[in-house]
Image 1 (cartoon, rainbow, N blue to C red):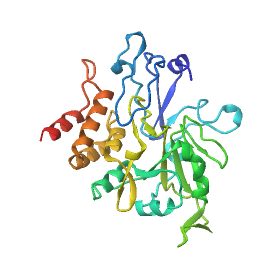
Image 2: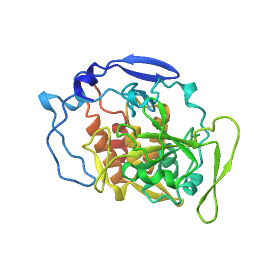
Image 3: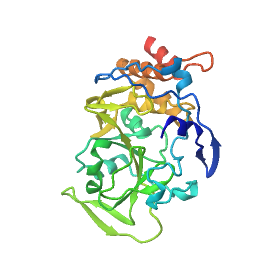
Image 4: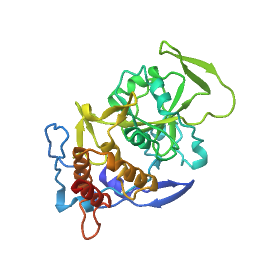
Length: 313
């Protein structure tokens, strides 16, 4: 979508089954033309045109999960696939898998994956700080072709304003970064050989069991989608906790730093920050400072004071 289309289009938020229209910020800058060589675990500067600064060039904050883009979703209108407004009742119920069940399900997956979201922080801190309504699994876009074969019997739905079935052999649109997963009225059981066996199951639509978070990459680097000045080495993306690959806590907290913070994100930050190492705190502080530098119009991110205090202590 071009800048003119973006600034004149109407984006609709999904909030508890209701729609709240708002118009995106018209001050979004044109994409930069400057290129940078690959770097590892460092922040890089990106110029903005026409004198725009980071604080007045930031994209508008959207809802945490689904954003309606009817007519501009992952599939065009001529495809015949519906792109209607999704409401809370449409999306169905959640009954998330546990981290060990995720580990068993992905045991045969050849791509890079790790547990993300609130569960990743609990696993990193060796405890359960709060109930979890869902569970997130981070995968790389470059490995998506391996998914359907690795977890047969599961329905995968592209989440981009609506939930659209993502079928075998169909490329996932670049605009989609979330995939909701449930058993296709079937139950997956792992046998001792690590294969999946399918047993018929009757009844209503099965609940959603986990969400895939799709991460873009550039060579051996992962990319932070909200600001491509931030990237890091794939080697540092996961670490092992209780035998499971888990997203590094400082990276997960960066994703949770998006303003306005949800109460559970504030709780996760308060719980996790004492467990960070000094290098992890410095990285998180520097990246949040880059995203929210503070100005007369917008104060700095509230987490920065805590990160500085912990660093000094």
